Image 1 (cartoon, one colour):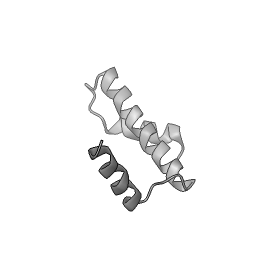
Image 2: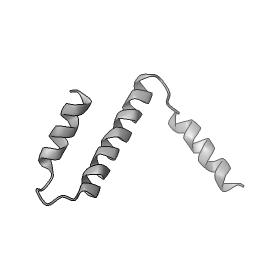
Image 3: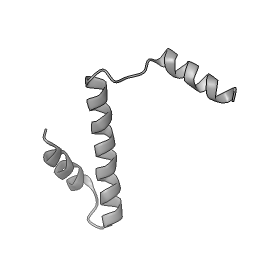
Image 4: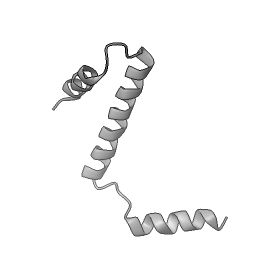
Length: 61
């Protein structure tokens, strides 16, 4: 599904009284999900173990 098709599909599911701000938020969410999927497909991921170490280091600061 193309990005345009994805947005159209999402917009069709929203109620008619949806505000422009809510529509923009929906599109931003879709864009963030797509960026995450693209990053994962490109191998730009962090393992669960690496995240646990990172979070633990934040708590110790």
